[in-house]
Amino acid sequence: MRIKAAVVLVGVGLLLAGRPVVAHHAFSAEFDAQKPVKLTGAVTRVEWTNPHAWIYIDAKDETGKVANWGFELASPNGLMRSGWRRTTLKAGDMVTIEGSGAKNGSNNASAQSVVMASTGQKLFSGANPTQ
Amino acid sequence: MKRSFAVMVSAAIMAALAPSLAAQWDLRPQAGVPKSSDGKVNLAAPAPRQADGKADLAGIWMRSEGTEKPGGAPAGQPPLGVFGNIGANLKGGLPFQPWAAELSKKRIANQRYDNPDALCLPQGPMQFHLDPQPREIIHLPRKTLIVHESNYMIRTIYTDGRRLPPLGEPQPYWHGYSVGRWDGDTLVVESNNFRGVQGGNPGDGWFDGNGSPFTDALQLTERFRRVNFGNLHIDVTINDPKAYTRPFTVRVEQVIVADGSEMIEFICHENQQFLKLTGRQ
Image (cartoon, rainbow over all chains, first blue to last red; front, side):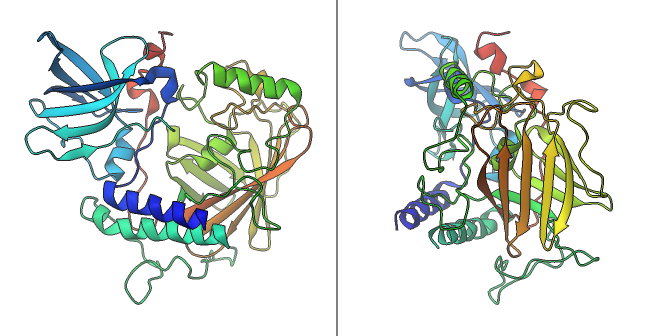
């Protein structure tokens, strides 16, 4: 019964959120789940590349200073199976991204959710810290 | 029964997702895919056969998302292997030799930095079977190929009757050296000559995300059986006396991809940031 319940729950989750997008790399080697990052800014560049896609945004910190941040997503093949294309995000799009910061302190993070600021549309969930 | 149910639900989820994927993919539906009266793929239809009558394992396969509890495998069936820990469902865990247990602990404590998957190197044989990215089985007259989308790797299984080479000849391979023969409808694949932990690369000899090691003494026996149109079972027996105190068997379950979608190119070194972000480049 537990298996049934678990699988059904996972199934509902999949149907609601699209297929899970899997991290290629060991999450904990690069990112710290205890360092949450939430930033809003304009997309400056999209790298639709393997083993992970990256998006870069110009975001203001709490002092108002603008910095360029890189966010690691899942791999393009996983993103495509979730219904996305390399043209889904374009330079200039305003997005809010939540994720986990890089352990090395650089302006990089692993994205867990990307939301279009103008519409509130949730674009994708990225890497999964549990993988 | 529980696992069968889990697999069925998992397959149903994949089938249910097909319409949403269909709206966004340039799908190329194949001929000969059995359909139910409602037009959906009939995963429970009989397994197809090759022209010569042998079972046909060809197709694109995704790992099943079925789960079970440790020690909870149905009677007479091997426990399910898990991508992160192939021994997760083995009662008592993996039968490590002491040094192998220590190495696994060290690899985990080291943040799995040297996982070959993370380094864009070929994964270990169980990582390939259990990776969430698909793989395609292709039968050719003298060999069967498994093309893995993960790290875009090809594994060759010779089916022309040759025997396994002596250990170390021609050289240890990341994928090992594999020969296959049919036992009824089961393709039995035996492999040796793996690059184990002695290979010299820290990414050598990883069975799973925990870095459960294997050595150059590894002998792998895999029994591939297509249960029906939609499901493939692979029972993998691991015999590596240098790393494990006894042979053990785990099962891999995979589900067919029959919506007409294809493998996607995955060139791992294209934009590899892992080494930079972990301070090694």
